[in-house]
Image 1 (cartoon, rainbow, N blue to C red):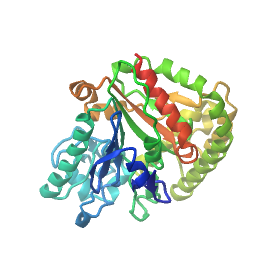
Image 2: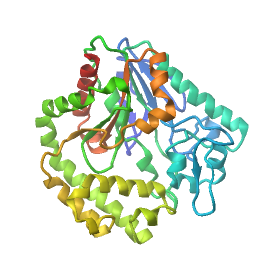
Image 3: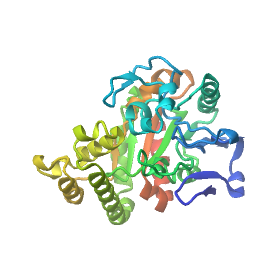
Length: 372
């Protein structure tokens, strides 16, 4: 139904998809497809700030981050050992490619810009993306902001650039059957994929008061899809264990240690990844093994023998609460008439190999939310 590249990035719709959806907007950054029930907003540009082609009008924009100031304070600073300096679009661009190693930039700002004109061009694209969300008339809006291809070649600052693709997510969005929505709509789903170690699919509540029932809903989903998820878990276990241990091996060999303190001035992105892994497997290993290569690898293996291990989780990977603050969702969603929003982080394994199952879970999630 869609055209994808070998890495799972969205490239465009097929004629079959266009028989089911109207293509109401297309540009180098995203496509908007809709019918009477669902509006899909599928990202086509890279989220990396130096992965762009200005001559083709294609910028590097992370739509799931805040619109930055061009210069001046943003509320964040970065210090890689030379003193703190403001995190803004100009400094993001001025220190590229080094800045993409630091989450102070990548976790907070939507784009980098070297000139006021470049800033304004990217700001217009960013704001139009959100007009497509907040101006929708459908009861369900599904935004897939990171599904575009990455063309940036590997280098010492970002050796795995294609890991920035939320791979295979557009195929989930287009496979969503029109849900049987109850009285509580419209709803927004922000759809992502991840290779962080852990559950097959995680739901983030964005910290919204309207999502107080999500724990109960996730429990229902775990029960309803228990048989199907159990059937795919052995293959996922093999994939996730191998992938995670290979990444740990690469970091250990390159940087010599995996402690947060050691990684802080090298790559806060890698520091974050290792700390996420420690949070998931922490009670599977002895305290003295934390943040050691051998200990983390043993923990990855031991995780699978843990009892009462959920296959779907709530706020287990990314809650979306930081992003909700960056995007001011608690104020913007009600103003646009939305009843609620959730972030869905689907494992790339599930999205690639079992998209219909993943789409069925997301569809049922939306139905249960709409019944509240």
